[in-house]
Amino acid sequence: MREANFDRGRCLLFRLDHGEDIICQISRMSANERIDTGVLSAIGALDGAVLGYYDQRLHRYEDIRLEGQFELVSCSGNISLRDGKTFVHAHAVLADRQGRAFGGHLMSAVVFAAEVFIQELLGRPLCRIDDPITGLKLWE
Ligand code: ZN
Image (cartoon, rainbow, N blue to C red):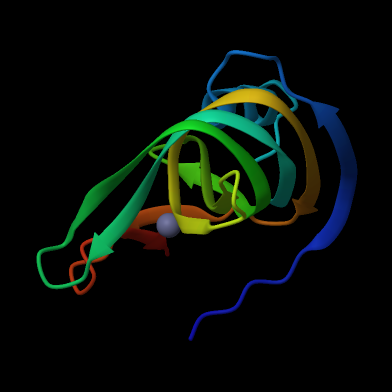
């Protein structure tokens, strides 16, 4: 286990633009605000999404494509640096009209409406590097 300590920085609440990708918007906002490290949460509604399921044996993501309208019931994640750039890692639970839930690594999703909270964390920025055991880019 590895641990890093941070101080709390700014708290940001913002609304995302309709019709644009959720990850791109959060990444852009984080880069514009120069947030190298932070945690995030979001709720809202989406018009289609791609979730990822990581195959631990094959070391690759399988796409879960969801088409249509969904509630973004819960989205949580973090912000750190990957290859020197802002990288948003988020997971999400979506619900359909019957309330059935789908969850996974949030690859992309078109925003119908969404509200995001970011807690900036101050300290030595967290950087992601290749991890040969998992095949993922994990915090160094
Ligand atoms: Zn993930």
